[in-house]
Amino acid sequence: MTAEVRVTWVQPEDLVGHELRQAGEDGRDARALARRWYEAGGSPAPERAGASAPGAPPGLRAVAERLLDELALLESPLAADEPDGLDAIRAACPQWPHARRVRPAGRERLHAAWLGRAAGCLLGKPVEKLPLEGIRALARATGNWPLDTWFTARGLPAPLAATYPWNRRSASTSLAENIDGMPEDDDLNHPLLALLLLQRHGTSFTTADLARLWLDELPAGRTFTAERIAYRNLLDGIEPPDTARCRNPFREWIGAQIRADAHGWTRPDDPAGAAEQAYRDAVLTHTGNGVYGAMFTAAALAEAAAGETDVHGCLATGLRVVPPRSRYARAVRDGIAAAREERDFDTVVDRLHAAYGRYHWVHVLPNAALLAAALTHADGDFTGSVCKAVSGGWDTDSNGATAGSLAGLLAGRPDALPERWTTPLKNRLATSVPGFDGTGFDTLADLTHRLTHEEALRP
Image 1 (cartoon, rainbow, N blue to C red):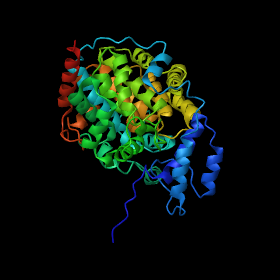
Image 2: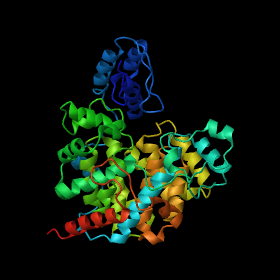
Image 3: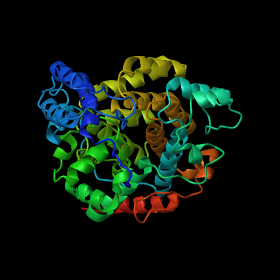
Image 4: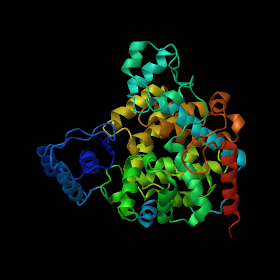
């Protein structure tokens, strides 16, 4: 007998609940379609993406397919404020940066960015998917609150450990007592893929180039949510950018934002160019706010890669490439405002959770607000940046990674990062991206540095 293998994140009956939730966030009136879904025996969106109800009623998949297609036809009243095309996005941004000649980024600065991204990601891995109260309780129980170093299970009371179990896929590699180099994570796989993309196609790559690269080099099982949907769509013969739109309720989640770093690292002092590269990457899988997250991150990192040392200036640059009336821009502004108005970061986090807790924990909007708040409150300090980003919950490893990347650039060199964050990484990265498993962060810095120099030499 062959055991059944059920692929999650792509089955129509698993997606309708998430699409109904997305419709509500977009202001689309889907009440009639929701009624048909629940009358047919469908379930609401699970808080854990990928989870599905076992024993779905017969015929539910056919109902789900019809409803997903009908939901896609509902127009959003927010569309005018949240355009999708690059020209329309530029037109909506009155302070869009002027294109600049790329300046070579310092190799040591890039090395610090790679290390910072890895350390921040690793810090967040064991508490990914845990509720905020669980993260706080686990850290407090081990004397690590406010968060200042790696999570540990040493000395943790058994009842508390049972109430808030560590992320089962990560605890064996990401708690202080278990760290032995950087384990595989999609937050590091995607920057590696971006390096391959730029090596093969240069900065004029197309979204189709990225799609072919994924099919050649990215194992499908290493994709999640919007990325897995887009991968499935590619295999079904759907071409970009429809890969992002077809039956993809995760298109405004955080996935594109975690893919943007290399576009910023390799366009130092050219935030407009970085944002445009990030756009071409993002539209394979995302739309609207999901795309803005990638553009914002790339532009902010491009500013820092050129030697900017003021985190607040980097965030302001990131906002210049985001439509100012969009929900993403509002989330970033909310995060910055909360961080400026509250001295206690726990209070900042509570304020953001009250405002954005209605969203799924992987959605880009709550995470954008938290990331902006953490970076603002930390004022450029590396430890403060990664710890605040992770201590706020939601997508802990992704937020820690992006905060660490920017704070690493601001630090300027690897030895400016505290050794407690860099030594356990052992200059070794695990990945399933071909050619990179076991690669050192110094080697990745060399490869990235070479790309920035090649771009700077272009006429």
